[in-house]
Image (cartoon, rainbow, N blue to C red; front, side, top):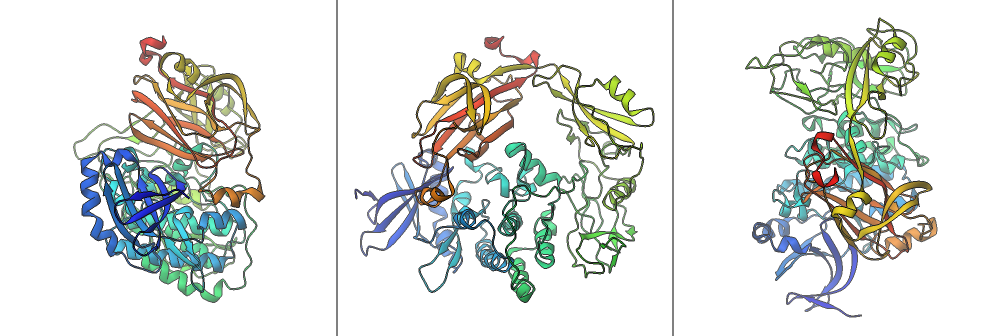
Length: 639
C-alpha cells in the first residue's frame, strides 16, 4: 500500500474519513510502528498565521488531556501547508455506527455510555477546552481491551480554530441536531453547551431520533432548539427523562456540569436494569412550543438586563399531583420575585404523586406570549418598543423589565392547559385568505397579529401560515403570516449569469427522494468533490430548494451501511457559505435529502461546497433551487 510521510516521525497510509474541518488518515510512527490516526486540517488553515500560531501554542494543552474516556492527542505537526493532529488509533467504530446498526439501546446501556462520555467531557473541560461538536460520530469505541471503552474525539479542532475569520470557526461551529440554544444565538459557549449536546445524544440513544429533528431542514432544527421543549417518547424511563430535561434546559446556567451528569447517571443503576430497548421512532414526539420574546428571567426569579436566552420558571418546593397525574411544584418564582403556588416544575410524570427532582423547569419567564396583549417594558433610555424583523423575532434595545407578571401568569396557564382570552371554537383554515377575509372568518371577538414574509410563489397579500394551526382551539389573538411582493430567481437562472464551479449542469426536471423537482442543478461527476459560487450581490434574502442525490443511484440499503461506513462515511457532505462564512452544512444521500430554507440576506457571494464521503454512484443535485428577495434590492444583472 503506498504511503506518504508526515514530518519526520509518521507515515500516512489511508484516508478513513472526511468532514468540515479536514480529513482523517490512518498511519504509523516510523520508529516503533505504533498505529495512529491523524486529522489533517484543511489547507487554508495553514495559510492563516493566527491559526498556525495557535496550533503551536495549544500543543501543550491538548497533550495534557489524559483520561480513559478521551482519545489521546500524541502530537501536533506543522509541515509546510500541512497541519496535523496525531491521535491514538481507535479501531472499534463510533456511536453513530452503533446506532445505525442497532437503532436504539436499552436505557441502562445508554446511561452507561452517557456516563463514560460525561467523564471524558469533564476531563476536557477541566483543561479549559470546550468541544463544541459533541455528537455520535465523535464518540469512538475502543475495543482493544477486555471491554468497549467510549472515548471523546476531535476535541482539539474547535479550540485551535475558534475566534478566527474562517468559516468553520465561527460561533455556529457544530452540528445543528446537537447545537445548544446559546450557540445558535452566537453567545460564547461554555461546557454546558457540550452537556446539552450529550443530552441530545442520550435522547437519541434511547429513542432512535434526536428530539428536534423534523421539517424545515437545519433552519427548522435550530428554531426548535431555541423555542420548543423536547417531546417525551412513550416508555422513556422517568429517572433518565428527568436528567435529560435538565441537560436540555434552554438556559445553560440551569444545566448540570459534565461531572454532575456522570455522577447522576452512575446513581441510576437498578432503576434502569432489565428495561428493554424502545422501538426506534421515525418522527420525534412534538414538544410544546415556548412563547417567543426578548427577555428572560434568572433561576432565582430576578430579571436579567437584556438577556436573550430562554430561562425556566422553576420551583423547588414540594411536588403536588393534579387529578390527571401532572406534577406541579410549589415555590416557582415569577419575574417580580413573587412565589407562584402550583407552578410547573419538571412537568408531567407517568404516575400521580411522583417525587419531583429539583430541575430547570421548562417555561420561560419574563416573556409575553405572542398575542397576549401584554405591554412592552421600558428601557433605561426610554426607547420606543422593540421592533420585529421580517421573521417576527423581537429586536430592540437592552431593556430593564419593570413588570411582566401578566406574561408569566399567561405562560403558566398555557402549560396547565388553561385557555385564557379565548375566542372559542376550533381554528379555521386561513391559508390563501386575505387578512380581511380572515377577520370575517374569525369574528369580532378574535384579534389578528399580522406578520409578513417574502412570497415564494404565493399570491401577494394572502395568508401562508397561521398560529394556532387549523383545528386547534381559537385564542383571543391569532398570528397570521402574509405573503408580500418579492423577486424570485432559480439557481439555474443565476447560473447563466454568475455560476462558477461544478454544480452547472441544469435539467428541467429530476427526481430526488421520490419527489419530482423543477429547474435542478446537478454535479458534473458522481464521485468527485466540487464547489460552485453564485453572485447574489446582497440582493436576496432566502435560499430554498431540495439538496440530495439523484434517485436511481446506489441507495444505502441496510446491508450495505456498515460496509459504507467503514470507508469513512456514507453520502455527500454539503456546506453552504455566504461570503466565506459557513451558513449551514448537512450530509445527504439517496433517501436522505436536505430541504433548504436559509437566510442569505446581505450575502454578496454564495458558495456551495460538497465532499463525497463514499464511492456510490449518485449525482449531487439541488432541485428547485431558488433565491428570494425584495424587488427594490434586485441586482441589475438579474432585472
